[in-house]
Amino acid sequence: MSSIPREAAVGFDRGAGDYERGRPGYPPAAIACLAEQLGIGPDRRVVDLAAGTGKLTRDLVALGAEVVAVEPVAGMRAQLERAAPGAEVRAGTAEQMPLGDGTVDAVLVAQAFHWFDIPAAATEIHRVLVPRGGLGIIRNEWDESADWVDDLRRLIADHAGRPPGSHRRDWRAALEATGLFTRLGEGDVANPVRVDTDTLAARVASMSYVAMLDDPARGRLLDAVRELATTRAGIGSDGLIETPYRTHIFAYRATG
Image 1: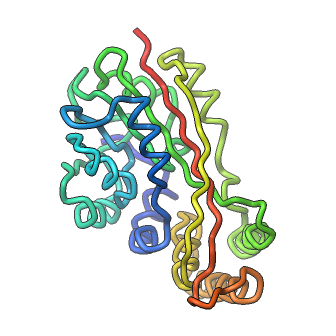
Image 2 (image 1 turned 90 degrees about the horizontal axis):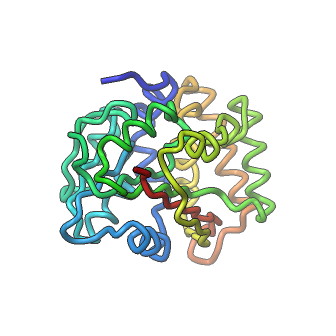
C-alpha cells in the first residue's frame, strides 16, 4: 500500500476517537443530492474513499448501495468497523485502492481530497470506476459568518501554529486539470449542529496537527476552546452550542 503524509497517518490514528465524537455528519439534503446526481442506491457498488470513521459510509449504506469503505489508518478503520457494520472495510489509499478495474459505479470522498496526490488519485479513481462512473466529493466547513468561529480559528492558530484549512490547496483545479473527470454540478447546504463544549473540544482535537501536539500543549488548547465556547459562542438553556457548518458537495463524471 502506498504511503500517506505522516501528519495524516499519525495524527488521525491518535485522534480517531475524537474524530468520531467531534466531527459532524452530513445533512440529508446533501446526501440526497449526491445520490441523485451519481445514481447511488440499490444495485450500485460504491466506494467511500478515505472513509475515516465512517461519517459518510453510514449514509451510503442507508441508501441501499453495496459499500466498500477504503481507509489507510488503522485507528480510523477500528472506529469505522464499529460505526458502519453494513460496509465492507478495506485498507488502502486513494493512490492504490484494493479494487479491480471498472468494478464500482461511484467513488465518494468526504473531507479528505486535499490529502491526496491528486493526479495519481484521479488516475486510480478513474481506473476502478465503470465507464462514465461518478465521483462525489463532500466537505463540512465551519461557517465563519459567526464571529466566534473566527475567534476559534485564531485560537487554534495561536496554539497549534496554523489556522484550520491552511494546508489545503486548490484540489478542484488539480482534479479538473487531469482531464479525467467532467463536472456535473455542485451545491452548498447549511448544516448547523448543536453540541456540548466537550464535543466541540473533540472536534478541534480531531485535527491531525492538533492530535500531534504533546499532551500539555494539546490540553492547554482544548481548555482554551472550552472557555471560548462558554464565553463567546453562547450556551443555550439545553447546555448546547449551535456550531454552524456549511456542507459543500461536488459531483463529477468520469470521461472516456
